[in-house]
Amino acid sequence: MYQFFIKRLLDVLMAFGGIIILSPLLLIVGITLIFINKGKPFFFQDRPGKNEKIFRLIKFKSMTDEKDENGQLLPYQERITPFGAFIRKYSLDEIPQLFNVLKGDMSIVGPRPLLVKYLPLYNDFQQQRHAVKPGITGWAQVNGRNAISWEHKFELDVWYVQNLSLKTDVLILLKTVQKVLAKDGVNSSATLNMAAFQGNN
Figure 1 (cartoon, one colour):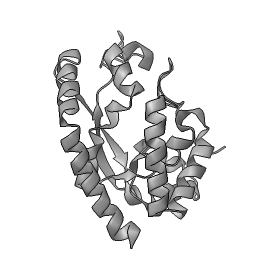
Figure 2: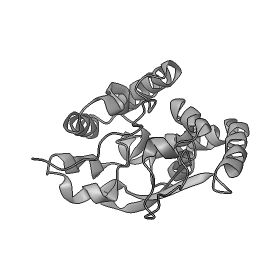
Figure 3: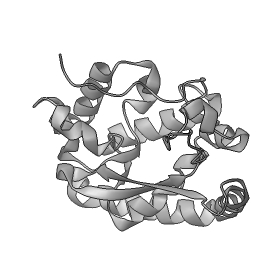
Figure 4: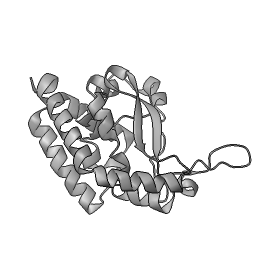
């Protein structure tokens, strides 16, 4: 009952309420990024959702599109802007995903949507993470985020799928608020992102 009806209802209510409450912040960040990123405030990327269905993820754009002499994008640390680092530090770049939640591609809570190129690399156990909608925050995000290994992250994702409930979602939301306020586990290092998932050896 919760997973198939109540969770979606709560997602819509929270996403709509969040967009209304955060609309001044959305405008300020969006307008600032228009100037910083030459008219491109948003970052769009295809990601796998429930049952591996591909959808278009939206985030605030924290990096420029600067390239080297060979036309290749520069490393993350060379493209991140000071304002981009700021919005990442406080997870403000994730706010536009509330529109993904309203559309029905995502949930407020669930395993984070990763890259499409990882799909062929999952084993049968890890593929279970796609049995539910991906989320803006999740069990792995409040239990280490980028500080834990891929294998541990996938174990936490599958644990969530197998233990999905209102109680679990409320716990994750409370822990998320705590983590964001403490800036714990966010992308504040020089490398910004985890190393790419290489599959199971």
